[in-house]
Image (cartoon, rainbow, N blue to C red; front, side):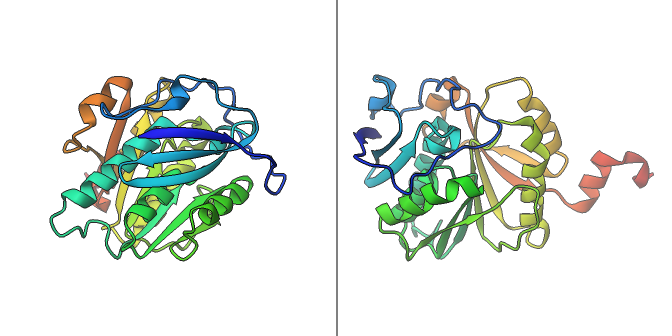
Length: 267
């Protein structure tokens, strides 16, 4: 993958984008890169304010508004590339190329929308891609959908973790969503809601280990889901050395959940 940054000559909508609870000054660790690709952002400071980057992922090119002054949701993060590269590889690896065909996909905690936009552009046969985040991120998401001419295939809507929703989907993307302790349970509650009436929903989670508190998230998550390492990703040996992971989540059956939460109930 390569990236080119272009300073915008004006702001769109005058938006100031902030994802509450996550400091925008958090240092960006070494970005994951495939051995046959490069990233200009790793070697030069990013410009301040709202700007456009060009993301090249395989045969897919995405133009992306970012706002580095507005918090972590307004810029890209390394786990996004792990998710995108695997999805594009998996779609090609499937001999029938039907891995994502006719699927309705929900991208949660979308931020700039890079993951959903790249997958939607690479897989025009998918049914619909819905990008979701909090209200402050909506202008950025909507601008990026328009910037890539994907209005007919991609939508953006507010999804506050832990709040009721009625999304009916086939696949869920959750890229770099584990970062704030207060959001651990709401995130899990949202995933539970998505799988309550459809246990066959496929959930993919890309994640970078950053702090010890993350262990608590996975303890809570495993009460409801089986957390399965994606082992067939050819790039796994590369990104795993940087603390990056890609998981598939399977909803546990009710007896399994009861056994973990209340062993006495099964006696």
